[in-house]
Length: 54
Image (cartoon, rainbow, N blue to C red; front, side):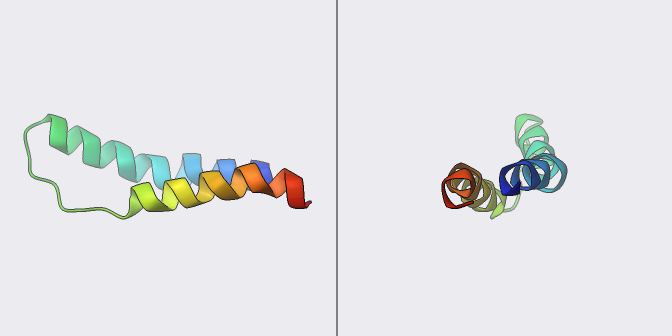
């Protein structure tokens, strides 16, 4: 049950932030640093581990 929740968080909360930043960088802007990648990685690890612990 936890894996779908984690995936939903990644898609709804983290992905849009990453997409906005990448769009800005590709447009030639200097975007500020973001911790969104670290959050995305942490959620991915949780998603992989969730079925093993549930």
